[in-house]
Image (cartoon, rainbow, N blue to C red):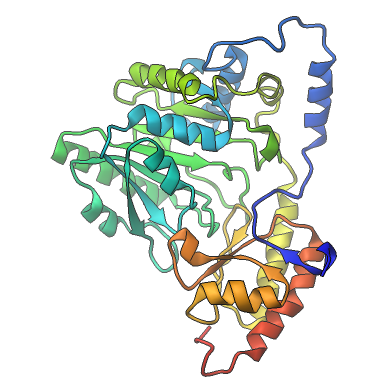
Length: 372
């Protein structure tokens, strides 16, 4: 049909260009006369970069005594999660995460000998702590969560995080184990409707924050992120040492040198989030006007509507695809009956897709279409 006639929402690949400040700092650094810009470094990353991340997190999280020594620069959040899981997991230990989830979590955990346990969220996609409590046992090594969430855009509230921290402390005491809380935060800066992100460190000491600049600076292809360990985490120094070692032995060695230098000067800078909020509003308003049911995302750049027929895979691969709209079935994220749309696309894709969504919805017989 040609690229312009196919409306692709299948991949969360940011359409927005990096901020002008990024281009300025990149050109400035590349043109500088500083020697050794391309040499090896400490495997945890440049001190300057780690300190910049620590300073930013201190401001956001309000935690005391967070320094460069608690931060490791990584090859994106994906690299950071693999380094973290390799560092903490013994073979056969469990990592619990919540459905719907980022599908690669399954592989990250099994990469390093762990076992995945999936806990379903509530109908509104909030964490179901009753289910989580039943899932935790003496083999539980970590809880992995993602907020704002991919694929739902859900932000977990301060109350939810406070209750989660309280539950994990109780379970550590019950089983005499250490349970890590790993927060996957590539979308932390992409928040709408004047909402706020409550953070992770304020609620639980044995916590690890994995960040990325793939989305807030639109640098997905540059693979630059970080790990931060709570200063009061148990055996924090040993854990950071393990992560630094794993950063090297997993083959990352260190995060990209030039990107480390550049983003250290851009902490707190981000793309124009209002543009993604506008795209969210147009897409969600359009789908809801047609009759699709969805919870409006709090952040990130994904919508997760209900499929108008129970079989989300058939809806995506047959009905939507025939209308030249590309999406991803919710089954792949651990939640059947939904589909994911990545609206980090140009406006023409959103406008072009809505007639197709409407045709699919209207062509369904009322008896086949489940109640929206």
